[in-house]
Image 1 (tube, rainbow, N blue to C red):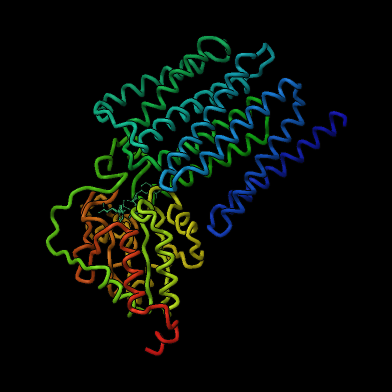
Image 2 (image 1 turned 120 degrees about the vertical axis):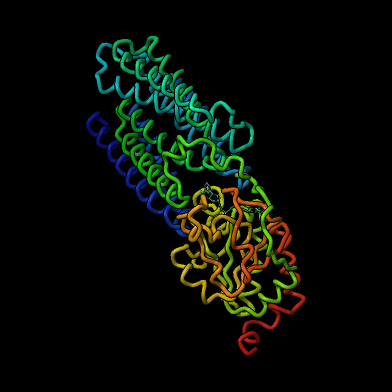
Length: 481
Ligand code: NAP
């Protein structure tokens, strides 16, 4: 194959890869198509690597490096994906973002070290951008992962204005190094930029509370795309530029969507300090004081209400993921459906600890996609709902978000479960959720608390319903009754 047809061939591969990537990103917006979309995106990445290898025509030694690197990286990826529990997915995403940032950083450093007199200004500026964004993404993502994992606390000094001074100082150092890179590509400015940007990534991420970390991870995901796009300019890969730009834009949109759904501005997340960090951001908790009109009931009473209901809505939250109760929930839903009950699941955009957390969790238990109903669609349905079961959710059903201007949640769209005839809230205590505040829903007359671990309560409900004979005679018996 001559060089012209080789170029055309690799361009065609790149084009197909970009189209597949775009289709993959589009498909990820729907639960039903997400699995296929993931496969398409993976295929796009595979094609991109093949196209690049054809273009570069590596030597046998380079082939060996590529083969060993791909095998080790692939193995690490497969083992991580297989072993990680669903609740630790944000940490894994943070780690993968960090790897993306590091890859772009290494590519740019590698090219800078071998830069020649012929290196153009675009390439040198791209090296500076790729190193800067790549290093911030890497160190910031590692800090984010360590904080979510509980390995790292928020140091007290980072909550004072001192941190702004430190970060501004580091940013100025980065600027100084970056403008010097075109003159000395492989010299001190490169290493100064690597060091100062890495410290800046730590300095910006360290003060942010664990509760805001998923937003930061989404932003870092966007940065990893920007770093990859800059690396694309460095090595002259159109595919990397396009793919990086798409990841950058998608990450930014997701960040904005999450901020809106959490009623937070990006500025307050990034510069507002560790809001929510003490409020039980990871495992719930918070104060139980202040409630005076709590009604609680046993799984038996809850089961009796379910047995009489015609329409039931489950509201899953972070606690359901912690309890790993999705399979028990699916079993309960099937039993109720066999009894003629109409069942659906109300999905709040930020229920859980990562975007799409509840969709993924319920999909794992084979809950039919059409039963997952988004907030805007299910809210008008609550007044005609007999029973709502809130499972390990708290902030996303707090009515103060609509009525109390002094609430930190005020303005956040919530699931209006209080409009249903009866509400059962399943959780272990009266402890707060992520926002660390009390929930007015718990004291409403139509609400009863069912205290306990979500899985244990669901199993209790299953055995109570079975002992009531639910599901045995089928739907017809219920309709006739
Ligand atoms: P939440 O407000 O954090 O409440 C979770 C509740 O689950 C806690 O009150 C806890 O109460 C209960 N719980 C914990 N373990 C349990 C178990 N084993 N069994 C039963 N209950 C258990 O959760 P949410 O309503 O899902 O709201 C999510 C919050 O996270 C929102 O404030 C959102 O803004 C924030 N957030 C979400 C994302 C995202 O992308 N999804 C990102 C960042 C922040 P007990 O301790 O009493 O059991």
